[in-house]
Amino acid sequence: MQDFFDIPFYATDLPCPLPTNAEIEDAPDKSLEYGGRRIVGLGQHFVVKFGQGVDLTEGENMLFVRKNTNIRVPRVFALYSDSETGKNFIVMERIIGQTLLAAWPKLTESEKQSILSDLRIQLDELRQLPSPNYFGSLGKRKLLDGIFWTEEPDLSVNGPFDSEEALNEAMMRKYSYNGGPYYRIEYLRKCLPLIFQGHKATFTHGDVQRKNVMISEKIQQDEERPRVVLIDWEKSGWYPVYWEYCLAVCALRWDDDWPLWIDAILTPFASEAAWLQSLRLELWS
Image (spheres, rainbow, N blue to C red):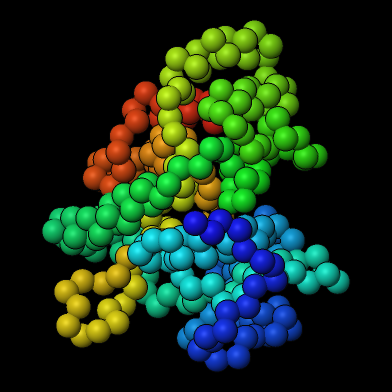
């Protein structure tokens, strides 16, 4: 199972010539800008995510999932860096449609069930990928979720990790890195192994929210329902099996019925979710 890709990467079956860096920078269709990242649309075929804050591992994650599963993710057309500007570029397929977040208020109960059944099938398939002997990004590299981030590289916090115990300790080290109180850290060191234990490494999207689920237009008139396409594989990697559910719960806003559907698409890990949500709030408050 290939889990590492040569960079730069250029697909050979392009729908049309790739846009130049100048065309990307000047694109009038600017959909999003945050944290050293910009996302722009160019014509009918391309979306480009680029900037110094972009990690090309995100593109590798999409290549990996497309190569090893039937999950619907945007095609990746190019992954490369600009040595002069220090910017990374992910050129990918433009999905014509709307996010599940935008569509949600207009959906009927049966439409929600149909779409989420499709999403559940895809997420279940993601969990069937053979588990490696580490927790980390593809190619046994550091994890990209912000909970493992440090300003300077620190493998004991960033990963990869050979055991769940090491991953648990990394979260405690991050707590200390953020200036957390010593006695709280020691208390958590006693508690976390009682909750976070016995979980295998599972390939994880890492940010299952409605904004990251595209409902694409039907590609054939005889299709019974639109395609569900997962986007934004920025934080993906090999995490404990509970991680997907917990991060989805951490992102809930509790302002509509979406929280009542989470258990329809992901296997619940209620105890782990409660502890991880508390920990993330403390780390980022």
